[in-house]
Image (cartoon, rainbow, N blue to C red):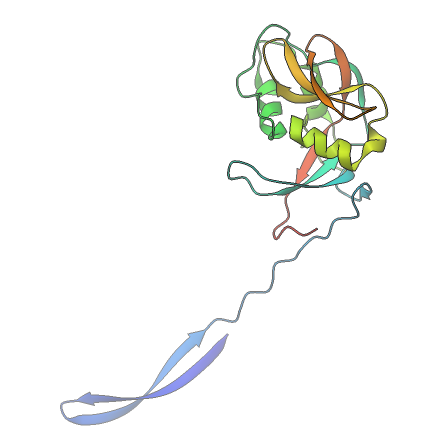
Length: 195
């Protein structure tokens, strides 16, 4: 903290008095520590997976780093064919979709349950990516998507959900009773966000 002393003349009943005014100026706060991620497509030590890049925040959410788990779930149905689940249709927010699915006690949601149960490097905040998050993961880490269809957490109806094709990379809807692969992701929010 810095102290500044200034002189002032104050008049009382015709007399001038000299006074010293003390003002305190706080020192600037130290700059926030920034985290520098590894190159896209490489393992981020201590973060539980491969770094896929920055996902743009939507609807007032901040941007975040997307980390893709190396472990893959095979031959899992999306689950609950024939009933739409409230809160699981976001194309951008897989974390919210997965929460809606795992909290829904009226049905089985195998793909979301698998993703949410993953613990890597002490992180237990993995989730089934939304359609747009899955696209970023596939684009940045194609070596993790070698075959088959990978589920997103984004349902399109009571019977279909979005999935990501491994071979040519396009997305389509797939019957929720079919089996597919699960590639969980997690978010890492660093402020300020650096790349």
